[in-house]
Image (cartoon, rainbow, N blue to C red; front, side, top):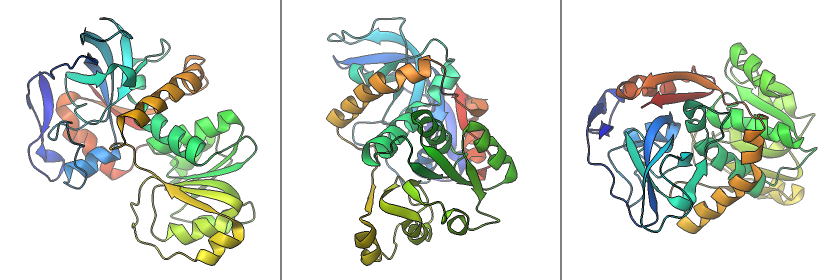
Length: 322
C-alpha cells in the first residue's frame, strides 16, 4: 500500500510517500480502505521526535484519525461487514491507504457527512467528550472557556458546549478567527494578541476551562474560575511546569485535572467509543454539529499539510485525501 513514511525526525520535508506492507488483521480487527485522514498537532510533535506511537502501533506512519470503507474483517468480527462506511480514532498509521482497527473502536459514518468531514472528527470528539464533559463535568447553564477556539479541538468544544446549553467563551489569535468562532456559538472571543483574557472575562467568571497552553495561562485560569470550577489540561504548548498557589485551589474548591488519550488502555477507549456512539452520534446524524474543514491535501502532500498546521493560520481541520 502507499503510505506517507516518516523517514527521520525533522521539518515537514521528512514526510515521503512510499510503499509499506498492508496491516495484518488480528481476529477482532477490521481493515479499512482509507478515504481521508485527519491531520493533528500531535502528528507534528511526533514528526519532530517528541511523541512516539504506543507499542504495537506504526512508528513511521503518522495519523490518528481516518474515515473509509471496511475492506476485510477478522475471523471474530461481528459488528461490521465488508462495504460498511466507518470513521475511527487510531493509535497511528492513518496517513496510508489501509489501516486496521479493533472492531469495537470503530464508529459508523453518519450518512450526512462526507469521508473528509468524518475523518476530521474522531480525535477532537474523543478528546472533548472525555475532557470537557466527563472529566470537566460541563453542564447546561455553566460558563465554559476553551483556549485556541479556532483549532480542531476548539471548534468541536464550542459547538458541543453550545448544544448542551452552556455559555461559551474562547481565545483566538486574529479578528478573522474571532468572527469564525462567534459564528459557531462563542459569546465572546478574546484576541490574545491584543487583550488579556483574564481582564476581559474576570467579571464573568468560568465554571470549566479547557486549556492546551499551560505556562503562564495557569495562574490566569485559576483566577478566572468560579468556586467549584474545573480546569482541564490536554496539552502544555506554552510550558508544562507552573507554580501553583494551593490556597487559591482550596479556597475556591477547584479541580485541576487533565489527560492524554493516545496511550490509554483498550478498555477505556472501548468504553469511550460506546459513550460517543450513544451520546454524540445522534447529534452528528441530526446535523446539529458542523465539521469545519479549512483545507484538504492529497496524501502525497502531507508535508504541505504539516507546514500549514505549524503556521497556525487555519480555522478548523486540515485533512488528507487518500
